[in-house]
Each structure stands twice: as C-alpha cells, then as structure tokens.
Image (cartoon, rainbow, N blue to C red; front, side, top):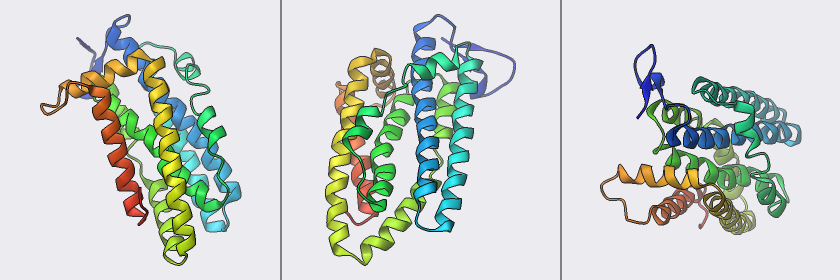
Length: 237
C-alpha cells in the first residue's frame, strides 16, 4: 500500500518507509540516478571528442540535461524518505565492467555504444519501473523519455553508414557485441539485486498476456528493443 500526502495525482503517492515497496523503489531510483550521472560524464567526454563544433555544443547541452534528469530522480528519493547519496553509491561501479569490455575504436563506434549499449540499461529501467509505486514510476518514465541524444546518434550514424558500406558492416558487428555485453549487465543486476527481480515480476503481473517467467519476458523485450534500434540505422541486429 502507499500513503498519499498533500496533493493529487501520481506524484503524491509515497510508499511507506521501511516497507518492501519502499526499499525496492529506492533500489531502482538509485540505479536510474546513477545511469544519468554516468550519462553526464559520457556526454561531457563526447562533447570534447566530437569532430564538429556543432556536435560539441549539442552534446554539452545533452550533458547538462542529464544532470537535471539525475537531480529529478534524487529529489524523488529524498521525497520518499531515503538517502539519495547512499542510493546512488550502491551502483557506483555498475557499468565499469561493461565499459572495460567495450572500448569504442572510433567516433562512430562511440555513438553506437551510446545509442545501443546504454539504451539496453534504459530499457531495463523502463520495464522494471512498471512495478513501482505510481509516483516513482512517473518520475522514472519521465526521465527516460528524453530521446534527444538518441536522435542525434541516429542521424549521424545513418548519414555515415549510407555512404560507407564497410562502416555499416563493422557497426552491425559492433552492435551485436554491445547488446551481448549489455544484456550481461542486466543479468548480473538480476542476480545481485533481488529488488529488481521483484519489480520486473510485479510489473509483469499487471499484463494479462505475461508469461509465468518474468525474466524470460524481460530479455525477450530487451532484445526486441535492440532489434528496433538497429533497424532504425539499417543495421542487422
């Protein structure tokens, strides 16, 4: 059950402090905040490396937007009575292994990694958010709804690939490697974080056609989303 504070609508729902629902919400919110914090650092680095001044300016704006999104999630953690710093600290190294195993070799590989590799983590958080209280779910979905950087990556990669068949073939292979590693990150999260498993399962129960094994459905959906991303670029998943 959730309690309702002053106000109306989804933002007013607060899971009771000390409840399993509260603890699970803090887990996922901490993960989303950490992913946005990592996105800020990555976009700032991309801004310094981008080949044109137009891209540098745009990516610096995206980095600033990532800070605003992160702080929106941190505010929700505070709102529901938890420590935002502790919630983010729990995921301090969540993408370290992924980054160590997938160093991009070119600007184009860097763009595809941002769009495809980190996109898997965002998709996972969207699906897990279906098990959250209404207020926390609304915050997560709002934060993950910003597709500005994805649109830039798609436009740049599509333009480059249309003029270079060799690059297209290389990026298709890179995309397949990225999704395999990214799904490995999700698998480790599910093994290490029972709260995330509960949220995925709870979200699945609200869907009448959900199969008995929620994680199986989860990985099927993550793979389908990856295939759609690759198709936007004309790449084979």
